[in-house]
Length: 183
Length: 131
Image (cartoon, chains in turn blue, green):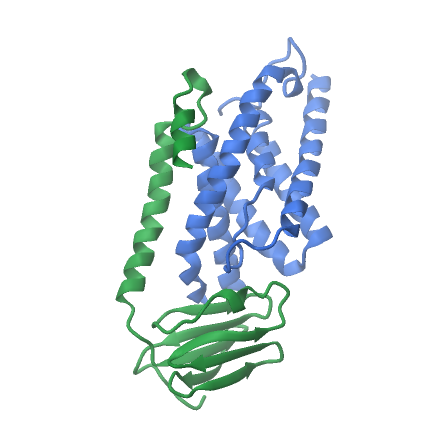
Protein backbone atom coordinates (compact mmCIF):
# COMPACT_ATOMS: atom_id res chain seq x y z
CA UNK A 1 0.00 0.00 0.00
CA UNK A 2 2.75 2.42 0.93
CA UNK A 3 4.63 1.33 -2.16
CA UNK A 4 1.61 2.10 -4.30
CA UNK A 5 1.30 5.56 -2.79
CA UNK A 6 5.00 6.24 -3.39
CA UNK A 7 4.60 5.24 -7.01
CA UNK A 8 1.66 7.57 -7.46
CA UNK A 9 3.49 10.40 -5.79
CA UNK A 10 6.55 9.90 -7.99
CA UNK A 11 4.50 9.69 -11.16
CA UNK A 12 2.56 12.79 -10.11
CA UNK A 13 5.78 14.70 -9.46
CA UNK A 14 7.19 13.63 -12.82
CA UNK A 15 4.05 14.83 -14.54
CA UNK A 16 4.27 18.23 -12.81
CA UNK A 17 7.79 18.50 -14.22
CA UNK A 18 6.56 17.42 -17.66
CA UNK A 19 3.71 19.92 -17.55
CA UNK A 20 6.16 22.68 -16.63
CA UNK A 21 8.41 21.81 -19.57
CA UNK A 22 5.39 21.80 -21.89
CA UNK A 23 4.23 25.23 -20.72
CA UNK A 24 7.78 26.56 -20.98
CA UNK A 25 8.18 25.31 -24.56
CA UNK A 26 4.79 26.79 -25.35
CA UNK A 27 5.83 30.18 -23.96
CA UNK A 28 8.69 30.21 -26.50
CA UNK A 29 6.30 29.84 -29.43
CA UNK A 30 5.07 33.04 -31.06
CA UNK A 31 1.38 33.85 -30.42
CA UNK A 32 -0.87 32.19 -32.99
CA UNK A 33 -3.69 34.74 -33.05
CA UNK A 34 -3.89 38.40 -32.09
CA UNK A 35 -6.05 37.74 -29.05
CA UNK A 36 -4.49 37.61 -25.61
CA UNK A 37 -4.84 34.25 -23.90
CA UNK A 38 -5.04 32.04 -26.99
CA UNK A 39 -2.61 29.18 -26.43
CA UNK A 40 -2.55 25.48 -27.25
CA UNK A 41 -2.26 24.58 -23.56
CA UNK A 42 -0.07 21.53 -24.03
CA UNK A 43 0.51 21.34 -20.28
CA UNK A 44 -3.06 20.15 -19.99
CA UNK A 45 -2.07 16.89 -21.67
CA UNK A 46 -0.42 16.08 -18.34
CA UNK A 47 -3.46 17.24 -16.37
CA UNK A 48 -5.90 15.16 -18.41
CA UNK A 49 -3.61 12.16 -18.23
CA UNK A 50 -3.36 12.46 -14.44
CA UNK A 51 -7.13 12.89 -14.15
CA UNK A 52 -7.65 9.55 -15.88
CA UNK A 53 -4.82 7.60 -14.27
CA UNK A 54 -4.15 8.95 -10.78
CA UNK A 55 -7.56 10.48 -10.04
CA UNK A 56 -9.11 13.82 -9.29
CA UNK A 57 -7.02 14.80 -6.28
CA UNK A 58 -3.79 14.28 -8.14
CA UNK A 59 -5.12 16.14 -11.18
CA UNK A 60 -5.93 19.16 -9.03
CA UNK A 61 -2.53 19.12 -7.34
CA UNK A 62 -0.58 18.63 -10.58
CA UNK A 63 -2.49 21.34 -12.43
CA UNK A 64 -2.27 23.97 -9.69
CA UNK A 65 1.37 23.19 -8.84
CA UNK A 66 2.24 23.49 -12.52
CA UNK A 67 0.57 26.90 -12.75
CA UNK A 68 2.24 28.18 -9.57
CA UNK A 69 5.70 26.92 -10.51
CA UNK A 70 5.68 28.04 -14.15
CA UNK A 71 4.30 31.49 -13.28
CA UNK A 72 7.03 31.80 -10.65
CA UNK A 73 9.73 30.81 -13.14
CA UNK A 74 8.55 32.20 -16.47
CA UNK A 75 5.63 34.51 -15.78
CA UNK A 76 4.42 37.49 -13.79
CA UNK A 77 2.01 38.02 -10.90
CA UNK A 78 -0.74 39.08 -13.31
CA UNK A 79 -0.25 36.04 -15.51
CA UNK A 80 -0.41 33.89 -12.37
CA UNK A 81 -3.86 35.25 -11.54
CA UNK A 82 -5.14 34.57 -15.09
CA UNK A 83 -3.63 31.11 -15.28
CA UNK A 84 -4.88 30.13 -11.84
CA UNK A 85 -8.43 31.25 -12.58
CA UNK A 86 -8.34 29.33 -15.86
CA UNK A 87 -6.81 26.22 -14.34
CA UNK A 88 -9.29 26.04 -11.44
CA UNK A 89 -12.40 26.50 -13.59
CA UNK A 90 -11.06 24.05 -16.15
CA UNK A 91 -10.38 21.47 -13.43
CA UNK A 92 -13.87 21.80 -11.99
CA UNK A 93 -15.50 21.25 -15.38
CA UNK A 94 -13.23 18.39 -16.39
CA UNK A 95 -13.83 16.58 -13.09
CA UNK A 96 -17.61 17.02 -13.39
CA UNK A 97 -17.73 15.92 -17.04
CA UNK A 98 -15.58 12.89 -16.37
CA UNK A 99 -17.92 11.90 -13.52
CA UNK A 100 -20.88 11.96 -15.92
CA UNK A 101 -19.11 9.08 -17.58
CA UNK A 102 -20.28 9.38 -21.20
CA UNK A 103 -17.39 11.48 -22.50
CA UNK A 104 -13.92 10.43 -23.57
CA UNK A 105 -10.84 12.50 -22.67
CA UNK A 106 -11.41 14.51 -25.88
CA UNK A 107 -14.82 15.81 -24.80
CA UNK A 108 -13.66 16.37 -21.25
CA UNK A 109 -10.59 18.25 -22.45
CA UNK A 110 -12.54 20.36 -24.98
CA UNK A 111 -14.88 21.52 -22.22
CA UNK A 112 -11.84 22.07 -20.02
CA UNK A 113 -10.27 24.28 -22.69
CA UNK A 114 -13.41 26.39 -22.92
CA UNK A 115 -13.67 26.63 -19.12
CA UNK A 116 -10.01 27.63 -18.94
CA UNK A 117 -10.52 30.57 -21.29
CA UNK A 118 -13.79 31.60 -19.66
CA UNK A 119 -12.04 31.59 -16.29
CA UNK A 120 -9.30 33.80 -17.70
CA UNK A 121 -11.83 36.27 -19.10
CA UNK A 122 -13.68 36.46 -15.79
CA UNK A 123 -10.36 37.07 -14.03
CA UNK A 124 -9.29 39.71 -16.57
CA UNK A 125 -12.67 41.43 -16.29
CA UNK A 126 -12.27 41.55 -12.52
CA UNK A 127 -8.68 42.83 -12.68
CA UNK A 128 -9.42 45.46 -15.33
CA UNK A 129 -12.71 46.24 -13.59
CA UNK A 130 -14.49 46.16 -16.89
CA UNK A 131 -17.01 43.65 -18.07
CA UNK A 132 -16.27 44.74 -21.65
CA UNK A 133 -13.79 41.93 -22.05
CA UNK A 134 -16.71 39.58 -22.56
CA UNK A 135 -16.41 40.74 -26.19
CA UNK A 136 -13.65 38.15 -26.45
CA UNK A 137 -15.83 35.40 -25.03
CA UNK A 138 -16.80 33.94 -28.41
CA UNK A 139 -13.36 33.84 -30.06
CA UNK A 140 -11.75 32.58 -26.86
CA UNK A 141 -14.40 29.89 -26.46
CA UNK A 142 -13.70 28.66 -29.99
CA UNK A 143 -9.96 28.74 -29.36
CA UNK A 144 -10.58 26.78 -26.16
CA UNK A 145 -12.51 24.08 -28.02
CA UNK A 146 -9.77 23.75 -30.65
CA UNK A 147 -6.96 23.63 -28.11
CA UNK A 148 -8.96 21.27 -25.88
CA UNK A 149 -9.58 18.83 -28.76
CA UNK A 150 -5.89 18.70 -29.66
CA UNK A 151 -4.92 18.23 -26.02
CA UNK A 152 -7.66 15.63 -25.51
CA UNK A 153 -6.64 13.59 -28.56
CA UNK A 154 -3.01 13.60 -27.42
CA UNK A 155 -3.97 12.71 -23.84
CA UNK A 156 -6.42 10.07 -25.09
CA UNK A 157 -3.69 8.26 -27.01
CA UNK A 158 -1.31 8.44 -24.06
CA UNK A 159 -3.98 7.07 -21.69
CA UNK A 160 -4.74 4.20 -24.09
CA UNK A 161 -1.07 3.30 -24.46
CA UNK A 162 -0.45 3.53 -20.73
CA UNK A 163 -3.18 0.98 -19.99
CA UNK A 164 -0.66 -1.61 -21.14
CA UNK A 165 1.79 -0.47 -18.48
CA UNK A 166 -0.76 -0.41 -15.68
CA UNK A 167 1.88 -1.17 -13.04
CA UNK A 168 2.98 2.46 -13.43
CA UNK A 169 -0.26 3.80 -12.02
CA UNK A 170 -1.32 0.99 -9.72
CA UNK A 171 1.06 -0.07 -6.99
CA UNK A 172 1.79 -3.56 -8.24
CA UNK A 173 0.14 -6.68 -9.61
CA UNK A 174 -2.02 -7.29 -6.52
CA UNK A 175 -2.78 -3.64 -5.75
CA UNK A 176 -6.19 -2.26 -6.67
CA UNK A 177 -6.50 1.07 -8.47
CA UNK A 178 -9.01 2.52 -6.04
CA UNK A 179 -8.35 6.24 -6.56
CA UNK A 180 -8.21 6.21 -10.33
CA UNK A 181 -11.54 4.60 -11.15
CA UNK A 182 -14.74 6.54 -11.83
CA UNK A 183 -16.02 7.96 -8.59
CA UNK B 1 -9.37 17.47 -38.09
CA UNK B 2 -12.74 16.03 -39.13
CA UNK B 3 -11.32 13.20 -41.20
CA UNK B 4 -8.87 12.42 -38.43
CA UNK B 5 -11.70 12.19 -35.95
CA UNK B 6 -14.02 10.00 -38.01
CA UNK B 7 -11.15 7.63 -38.70
CA UNK B 8 -10.52 7.27 -35.01
CA UNK B 9 -14.17 6.79 -34.17
CA UNK B 10 -14.10 3.63 -36.25
CA UNK B 11 -11.56 2.04 -33.93
CA UNK B 12 -13.54 -0.71 -32.35
CA UNK B 13 -14.55 -1.37 -28.76
CA UNK B 14 -13.83 0.85 -25.82
CA UNK B 15 -10.50 1.92 -27.25
CA UNK B 16 -11.96 4.72 -29.31
CA UNK B 17 -10.57 8.20 -28.85
CA UNK B 18 -13.79 10.10 -29.60
CA UNK B 19 -17.41 9.03 -29.08
CA UNK B 20 -20.75 10.47 -30.10
CA UNK B 21 -21.26 12.32 -26.82
CA UNK B 22 -17.94 14.12 -27.37
CA UNK B 23 -18.90 15.20 -30.86
CA UNK B 24 -22.26 16.56 -29.68
CA UNK B 25 -20.56 18.42 -26.82
CA UNK B 26 -17.89 19.87 -29.12
CA UNK B 27 -20.48 20.86 -31.73
CA UNK B 28 -22.48 22.70 -29.05
CA UNK B 29 -19.37 24.43 -27.76
CA UNK B 30 -18.60 25.62 -31.30
CA UNK B 31 -22.09 26.52 -32.51
CA UNK B 32 -23.32 28.45 -29.45
CA UNK B 33 -20.53 31.06 -29.20
CA UNK B 34 -20.21 31.29 -32.98
CA UNK B 35 -23.88 32.14 -33.46
CA UNK B 36 -23.79 34.70 -30.64
CA UNK B 37 -20.68 36.22 -32.18
CA UNK B 38 -22.11 36.36 -35.71
CA UNK B 39 -25.41 37.84 -34.55
CA UNK B 40 -23.74 40.56 -32.49
CA UNK B 41 -21.25 41.35 -35.27
CA UNK B 42 -23.95 41.61 -37.93
CA UNK B 43 -26.36 43.70 -35.92
CA UNK B 44 -23.85 46.18 -34.49
CA UNK B 45 -24.25 49.63 -36.05
CA UNK B 46 -21.35 51.84 -37.09
CA UNK B 47 -19.89 53.69 -34.14
CA UNK B 48 -19.60 57.41 -33.65
CA UNK B 49 -16.80 57.74 -31.14
CA UNK B 50 -14.11 55.86 -29.33
CA UNK B 51 -13.68 55.61 -25.57
CA UNK B 52 -10.30 54.97 -24.03
CA UNK B 53 -10.04 53.19 -20.70
CA UNK B 54 -6.89 52.72 -18.63
CA UNK B 55 -7.15 50.45 -15.59
CA UNK B 56 -10.88 50.34 -16.18
CA UNK B 57 -11.27 54.11 -15.94
CA UNK B 58 -12.51 56.23 -18.80
CA UNK B 59 -9.67 58.62 -19.62
CA UNK B 60 -10.64 60.06 -22.97
CA UNK B 61 -13.26 60.07 -25.67
CA UNK B 62 -12.61 60.92 -29.30
CA UNK B 63 -15.02 61.27 -32.19
CA UNK B 64 -14.37 58.94 -35.11
CA UNK B 65 -14.43 62.02 -37.32
CA UNK B 66 -11.42 63.64 -35.67
CA UNK B 67 -8.58 61.94 -37.52
CA UNK B 68 -5.12 61.73 -36.04
CA UNK B 69 -2.91 59.92 -33.59
CA UNK B 70 -3.60 60.00 -29.87
CA UNK B 71 -1.19 58.80 -27.18
CA UNK B 72 -2.59 56.77 -24.27
CA UNK B 73 -0.37 56.96 -21.20
CA UNK B 74 3.28 56.32 -21.99
CA UNK B 75 3.04 53.06 -23.85
CA UNK B 76 0.24 53.18 -26.40
CA UNK B 77 -0.77 55.29 -29.38
CA UNK B 78 -4.07 54.87 -31.19
CA UNK B 79 -4.82 56.24 -34.64
CA UNK B 80 -8.18 57.36 -36.01
CA UNK B 81 -8.27 57.09 -39.79
CA UNK B 82 -11.34 57.38 -42.02
CA UNK B 83 -13.76 56.39 -39.27
CA UNK B 84 -11.73 53.43 -38.06
CA UNK B 85 -9.49 53.03 -35.04
CA UNK B 86 -6.38 50.91 -34.63
CA UNK B 87 -3.53 50.58 -32.17
CA UNK B 88 -0.65 52.36 -33.91
CA UNK B 89 1.99 51.75 -31.31
CA UNK B 90 2.38 49.80 -28.06
CA UNK B 91 5.38 49.05 -25.90
CA UNK B 92 3.88 45.87 -24.43
CA UNK B 93 5.96 42.69 -24.83
CA UNK B 94 3.53 40.76 -27.03
CA UNK B 95 2.24 43.61 -29.23
CA UNK B 96 -1.03 41.71 -29.70
CA UNK B 97 -3.11 44.88 -29.51
CA UNK B 98 -1.42 46.19 -32.66
CA UNK B 99 -2.53 43.06 -34.51
CA UNK B 100 -6.19 43.33 -33.51
CA UNK B 101 -6.97 45.31 -36.63
CA UNK B 102 -9.17 48.30 -37.34
CA UNK B 103 -12.44 48.70 -35.48
CA UNK B 104 -15.43 50.87 -36.36
CA UNK B 105 -18.62 49.12 -35.18
CA UNK B 106 -20.33 49.84 -31.87
CA UNK B 107 -19.06 47.51 -29.17
CA UNK B 108 -15.85 46.52 -30.92
CA UNK B 109 -12.77 46.69 -28.75
CA UNK B 110 -9.02 46.61 -28.77
CA UNK B 111 -7.45 45.46 -25.55
CA UNK B 112 -3.84 45.76 -24.48
CA UNK B 113 -3.72 43.54 -21.41
CA UNK B 114 -0.11 44.24 -20.33
CA UNK B 115 -0.72 48.00 -20.27
CA UNK B 116 -4.33 47.63 -19.04
CA UNK B 117 -5.57 49.76 -21.91
CA UNK B 118 -8.94 49.21 -23.53
CA UNK B 119 -10.33 51.06 -26.53
CA UNK B 120 -14.04 50.72 -27.27
CA UNK B 121 -16.24 52.02 -30.06
CA UNK B 122 -19.44 53.69 -28.88
CA UNK B 123 -22.53 54.57 -30.87
CA UNK B 124 -24.09 57.94 -31.59
CA UNK B 125 -25.80 59.47 -28.56
CA UNK B 126 -23.34 57.90 -26.16
CA UNK B 127 -20.67 60.44 -26.93
CA UNK B 128 -19.45 62.97 -24.42
CA UNK B 129 -16.80 64.67 -26.52
CA UNK B 130 -14.20 66.49 -24.50
CA UNK B 131 -13.71 64.14 -21.56
